[in-house]
Amino acid sequence: VSIYVGGRSTTRRDFLARIRGYFDYIHALFPGLEVQERVPLPDQPDVSIDYRHLLTLEEKGIEQFIPEGRELPLAVAPLLNGSATSRLYYQQRLQALRKHITQLDAHSEAAWLRYARERDAAERSTLENRIRELENERDKLLREMAESEQALAQF
Image (cartoon, rainbow, N blue to C red):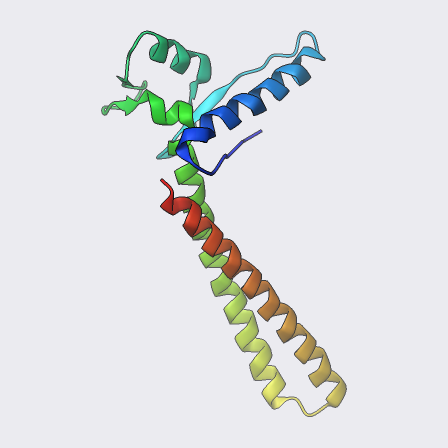
């Protein structure tokens, strides 16, 4: 399960703690269930650090550490506060949305070209509906992009 929390940096950690509390409750319902709490690295989401280890570093006043296999230190607080991973999430989300919009534009252009050549009224009506669907989907994606850009600007 991956969790991304947006919003103000001052409240993200509290929200993450509440979500963890719900997971703790659920985990307690299944004795013997092995649970790992991991925090992905911002620039390598496939690599993660043990959450409890990060808490220990914070408790000991260690502000930075060098994860295994890396040469440069990482700050502990942004990882625990969710800001580093949330920023990465929104950056990846924007990239995916841009790609999807490009694909939609290509489909829409193809539908318009077919519409321009089509002489059959029933087929033209079908194409009109398809073009409307594509334009509505594009509008929805543009709204999602604007929301993601706003969220990213908060970091």
